Image: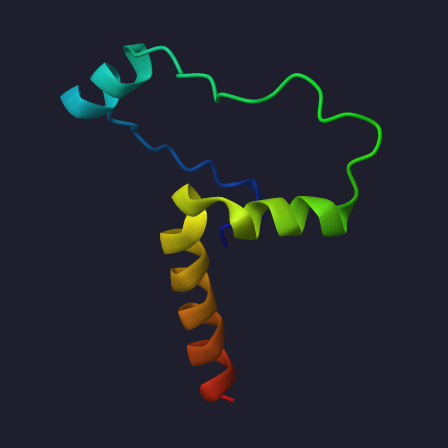
Length: 73
């Protein structure tokens, strides 16, 4: 009988050219603000995000996705 708990499985890993190229690229750091200040609360941050016109498209999409998920239940 064979004891399968002691069996060693061998596998080969392959890295494609596109994966190797992607790994060679440095990671682009995110642009973040250094300090928000001491008086920024969650509510204030939410209000500022809702007022930001550059985020309007993403907020609308998030609301649509959220309402669609609620409808699925």
